[in-house]
Length: 165
Image 1 (tube, rainbow, N blue to C red):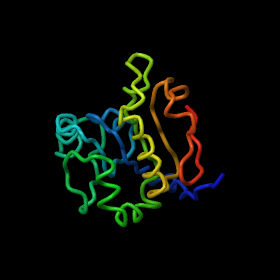
Image 2 (cartoon, rainbow, N blue to C red):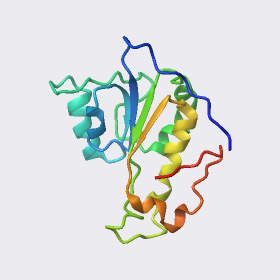
Image 3 (tube, rainbow, N blue to C red):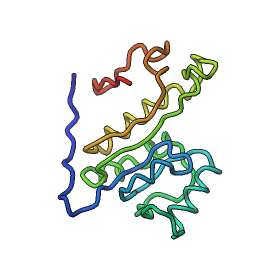
Image 4 (cartoon, one colour):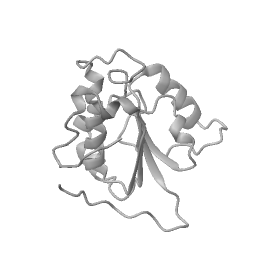
């Protein structure tokens, strides 16, 4: 198995910086860390996240320190990975924690468990972002169905990193 080198956490007096993938309206952004950027494809969810965390509203969370190279809009994770690989790699050592909850509708026990649902593969984009940014820590939220769903019988990436829920 290949081990990905990660950058260390900052000194105790410095804030932990994080990026939020599959952010929805920003729930995981309320953990008390300093947000760098968020990725959310749904325009309505991103609009809520933007109103609360990008536009200076008085909320109990830090406003994001959004990078100038990334337009403040609803993005698909695949679009950011394709259009901004060099900018993402420059975040190594600057984004300490990567959070996110890839879509689970296709394998959730509460859903129809449709093997061909294209969202089933989006966890791989989370892994690609890990490879690009190399954070010191990860927070990956999902459902128990990810462990037994047919499309995930080989939870291995091109880097050899295995994921277990």
